[in-house]
Length: 261
Image (cartoon, rainbow, N blue to C red; front, top):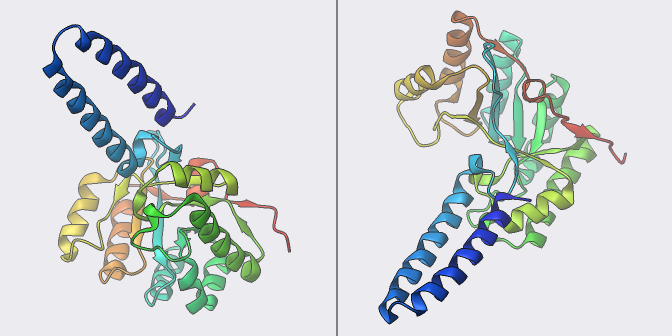
């Protein structure tokens, strides 16, 4: 049973008990019930934006270990800078995970093929990465996931099984879509904030302070600073005897299913 269902059961029991008790105390105690409902709504929203709570979907986002191993992942590509990212990864012989957007793949099909050819992991990151993706129905979300899956499979003949929620937001509709597609939801434990922080030195400082054994690091192909920051991170972790391995190896999960082709 999901944390979401458990919370609903607890809430329903609590609200029934509260109404019963308050009915014998004071009419004005109804304000306490309203406040309780407002708190619950806030709790639901917080559960949506923090996937680590596993409120709606079980999301794997790190490895509990003392071994100095990490995984690097990229979102929102392919993009103009993806080829440079691949050059850097190739130079260091590092394998990363790329969670790709379907409409971007249509623009950069050859980049998709290169990502696959060079041994990097490929995952689904929706088709549009629409700003209002989290407001889509389960049917719309499923269609987005299917469309991206088909583009990937038609070009590299692999059926992806890993999905990263756009913006890291989860909800009941997404739970249905992910379940229907039989995907494993993947998060991250170290967000570089490379699309928000515009100063490269600040991004590098954040990475230095927060890197831990078992970290799944999140970057974006679209970040203006990604080339310099990626070079920095790899040099830095190697300096401290970290090993960078592919995400599915780090998390011990299956990345691909049986392709239809």
